[in-house]
Image (cartoon, rainbow, N blue to C red; front, side, top):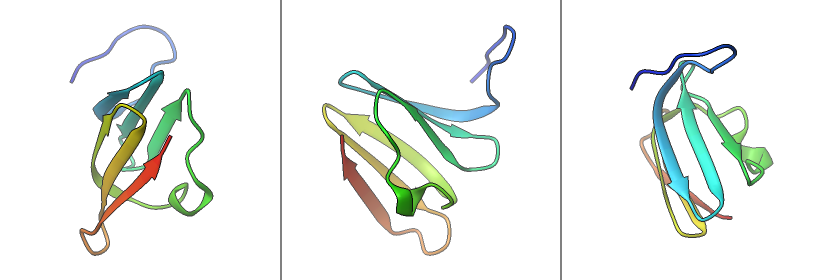
Amino acid sequence: MSCWGEGYPDMKSMALGHNTTCILDGDDMVRCWGVRVPEEYRRASFVSIVADGDTVCDVVTTNFSVRFAPV
């Protein structure tokens, strides 16, 4: 993925849901707009992220488990 412009975040992937945009940034952290990232996920490191409708799912780096958070 390539982005340009002033102030864009370094990102590896993007997930689009219903009124929600989340990215997996260059530090493997999740950032979201339109929804708050739950507290337990704010410092976690992730391998991938997807969104569908009102749900955001991700795979955690430490043990590759899948976590999801309804939006």
